[in-house]
Length: 145
Image 1: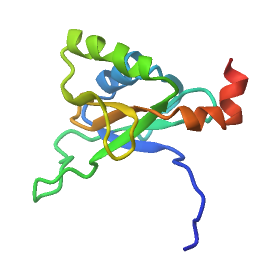
Image 2: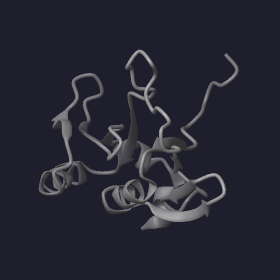
Image 3: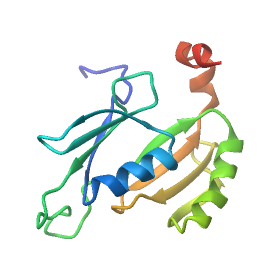
Image 4: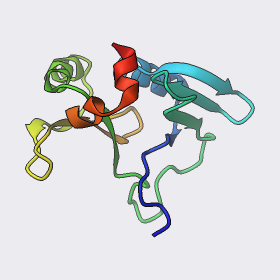
């Protein structure tokens, strides 16, 4: 195995309406626009530690976002937060904005952590999960406080 210790660098999502998706990721997940490449239709969003954590790629009109067999290309991605309170506080916000909640808030049996999953404007599944251990041992977390 070549990669023994890694971490997710970023994710790039194909989106049907980049403005709608940008608003969602800014308002719901708290990301900030870090850059744009209008030539290729990319918007980069960041939590501030990296150039970008999420990038949104505008799909040209008429292009398919789903494989021909109907299976989405992405199951889900997860954003870690440092407390269960964040998981519980986001639920009423999602409901108020009529954002489809797929599961949760719940305590996952396998990992034992709090989690909530919901859909972005393009139907991508987004999970927010508490991983206090990651923040406890992550130097970046200490510099934020």
